[in-house]
Length: 74
Image 1 (spheres, one colour):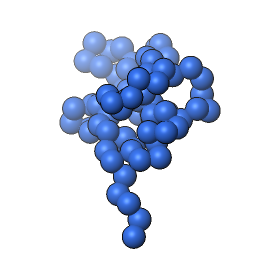
Image 2 (spheres, helix red, strand yellow; image 1 turned 90 degrees about the vertical axis):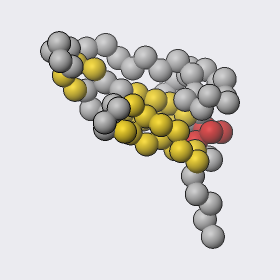
Image 3 (cartoon, one colour; image 1 turned 180 degrees about the vertical axis):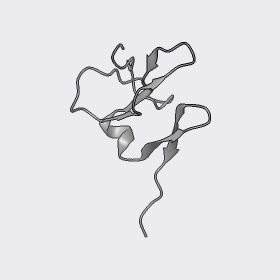
Image 4 (tube, one colour; image 1 turned 30 degrees about the vertical axis):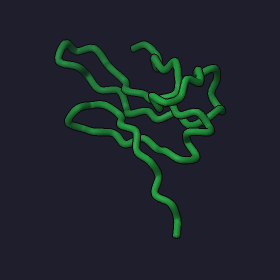
C-alpha cells in the first residue's frame, strides 16, 4: 500500500500546497481492499486557513471526501 496522494488543499478555491503534517488538517479513511485485492486509502487535506471555515465529509457510496462549509455558531 502506498501513502496518501494529497498534494494541495482540497478546497478548489485554494491553491495551497501540502508540504508537511501539522499544517492544516489531514482526513483519512482506513485502507480498504479494492475489487482487485489492492488496498486503497482515501485522503484529503485542508490548509489551516480553509479548515477554519470548512470540513470534509466522507461519502461511503462514492468512496470520496466532499468539502462542506462549517455552520457558524450562534
